[in-house]
Amino acid sequence: MASVSSKPFNPFAMAQAQFDRVAEMINLDHPTRELLRQPLREFHFALPIRMDDGSFKVFRGFRVQHNDARGPHKGGIRFHPQETIDTVRALGMWMTWKCAVVNIPLGGGKGGVVCDPHNLSMREQEALCRAYVRQIARAVGPLQDVPAPDVMTNAQHMLWMLDEFERIHGAKYPGFITGKPVGMGGSVGRTEATGYGVVFTIREALKELNLRAKDTLASVQGFGNVAQYAIELYQQIGGTVVCVSCWDQEDQTSHAFYKADGIDLAALRGICDRFGGIDKKKAVSLGYKILPGDAWIEQEVDILIPAALENSITGDNAGKISRRVKLLAEGANGPTTPDADHILQERGIFVIPDFLANAGGVTCSYLEQVQSNINYYWEKDEVLGKLDVKMTSAFIDVSELAKKNKLFMRDAAYIIAISRVAQACRDRGWV
Image (cartoon, rainbow, N blue to C red; front, side, top):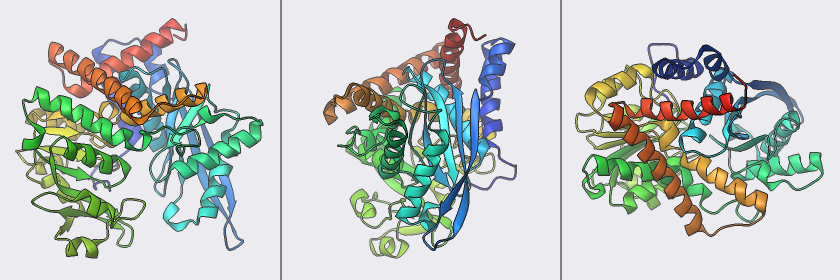
């Protein structure tokens, strides 16, 4: 889904550059900078799996634990054929800031396996999940490091991982992992949480921009879980989505689906696969215009919601954004490169940074973790209500700091997050 840039892209270098810039702004001392710009520890391992045809295939897996000064590491496990250790390092660092900016008592971590679930049977995926847990079982747990689903992983994967962890340790630990099926220690509202959280922040931003949701149009990159639920709630508050894009597994490219009078979410959900890929022929029969995948960024809309992968908005394509766009809400992790950020700032586009906009997922994961650990589960309205309060409060904290000091929203969010983590490190006597 990521756009092709003329410059080599290293997500960890980008994450460190973002950190270094803010560390300089707040005059962070050198030892704390050195501590926070690298992971505390990381794991690399081989995962030999017997395939359905009887052969063996070796996959590569990673788990990065960036910082746990404020609480146990927290972060998803993604299955992706282009996974790299630098992507996992970057995501782990961003998780540290994400947990801090919404003020939940967790640190940052991330995991990944280099694989393509599209090409694996369910039995092979289960074997991969269990092998992954066996490699890290002594370094994770409800009081150490709590994984969750991410790109191309889901509740079933989490349940296999939980089962393997409990087999190894000989007891029940539902708080070890989040994103589990409801009824097996999972929380209601978790599926909706990230996408809904994006829209909670959009709602607050629209107030600041003096816009009504019903007067706005949006274009969305991605049609996975985050994108679908962001579209769902955005439509509920009155907005209209005219374009979505998604990856086509058959063509190995992305396509955008455009409908001038607004997409029909239920209809598109009915013709997409479990990874969010939309059937082009069926979409055409429903009246959608098929455009190149990067056309989502060029639409005449008020709001852009990148909700796919990192490195989607770059210095090469940011200039294609319509002059009508007033708000960009980063549903994905790291979708905007620093050179693109500069262009957005010059254009006066209000950006809700990723680790604030998409923090609904980790916030609800935290709520699931709490419920699992106390063995008491709340009703959906209560979960989503707590989520709304947390997201709204975090948005207001960042917005007020940005207005007070005339800062870009991303800088304000980083200042709050890094300051909180640095203070926790100092309080513990680490630096």
